[in-house]
Image (cartoon, rainbow, N blue to C red):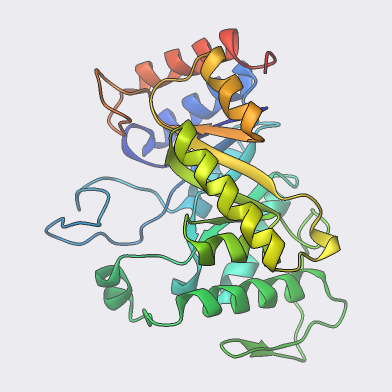
Length: 291
């Protein structure tokens, strides 16, 4: 099983020195990847379903990863997730291709459709048709990444007679991982995703989502070019070897750990840098390579 660390761009890791030290500690401990979340703006005042207070610091994932690409050697970098319908697909395709080049092909492109209407309203982005728009943008981005003479005609994106270099290091572009835990998200993952990412799930919740993905696979054709759907999960609570094995037994390919929880909390995003690096080292010593 692969191990990742979530939150490399936020909270205690939102300064350059702290993010670099934590990423380097994760790389030294044997972690496969570090992951960055995204909200361009947060509603003020905070109201459900907003996940964070409006003053919570969060670096742009791509800029954070461009910095970390020069501070690390082997660890992969995953966006968990970029809210794709808020972005211009060709501008984002250029950013992601550039990041894949700068990192030597270490990028994982995690995307989602978003759920905070105040954020969409502030950006002037339409809140309707987020799912179809996301799929359209993914197809457009893959076209500009992979085609010799790229062109694309879709409902929400279209272009022709243009090229964008350099191409990503990874053939056909970085792997696309879809977030979300709805039947529609499972369907998008099956038909368009290299992987699926479920956030803050216990073992039972993971089982339910995997059942949903299986059902989506039975009713939707998966392109052979995508290969096996890679399963990533951010678990709740601290992870030890036995708990990691329970996720692995379900078929989870990657656990993306949150900052270590305090007390009885299911998870927290307020741990200190020292607590995070200590947790990373603990996981490296007790879990990585054993499951």
